[in-house]
Every structure is written in C-alpha cells, then in structure tokens.
Length: 173
Image (cartoon, rainbow, N blue to C red; front, top):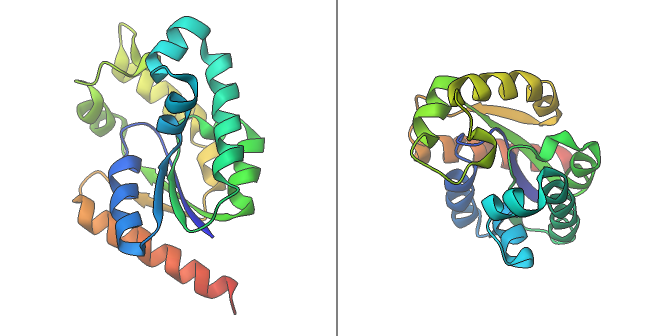
C-alpha cells in the first residue's frame, strides 16, 4: 500500500510527504517532479507553453505510472482530484490523506513562490478561496483529513503516519 497525500497547494504535501516517507522507510514520490522529469520542463513552463489540459494529461499519466509501485509516499498536485480516474487509480493501491489549511494560511505560505501558474492573477487570495471552494467536495475522497495550519510539520507527520498505520491494520483484520 501507498500513503497518498492530496490537498490544495501550500498545505504541506511535499514537506510532510518527505518526512512520512523517511519515518515509514518508504520511497518518496512527488507527482509534479515526476511530470517535470518526463516533460523536461517545469510545471510553470508546461502551463505556459502547452496549457492546463496538457498538464492534466501528463498528471494522469504520472499517476498511472507511480501507482504501479507500493511502499511509497506519493505527494500529488493540488488539482489531482479534478479527474475521477486519478482518484480511482490512487485508491487502488493506497490510503489517501488530505492535508488542509485555510485560504489565508495557504496564501501566506505560497505568496513568495512565483512558480504557481494558477495563482498569477490580480487577486491571488480570492483565487485561492474560489479554487478551494470548488475543490472541497472533491477532496472528500480522502480516507482522512489532517489540518496543517497551526501545527509544526513533525506533529502533522506523526498524525499522518499514525492514521496510515491504523488504516493498514484495519484493512488487514
């Protein structure tokens, strides 16, 4: 089984994923990095040169590849839930945990990062709020939800690993 982290950008998927992988002695896989490696471009470049449709196609292909393996922590892109087939593939060999944070915390965390193509708007906080509202029902596919805003990454990681192990035990009963 894999531990899969979903959630909006800036909720800590990569940070928590790396730490959880180390604690579980699993491989860490970041689907955005996987896409960049295959395409030879950054996510920003893919959006700029090819558009979101191409990116989502590459994302689906990356999900298909990475879900063929087990014993890994997979950090997904924030929009992975937009395609039901992605969720189906992830659930097929994984336990999904959604990391959450309120819009103002997300904005604070990512406001200095210029590599967020979907936030290149006049009102990034408004865009975050709107996108979160649209995606919130889709994030309900997770087995668990863990709020990350007022906690340090070690605390969040410990909860994620504990919930993953508990679900594994339930599944093996």
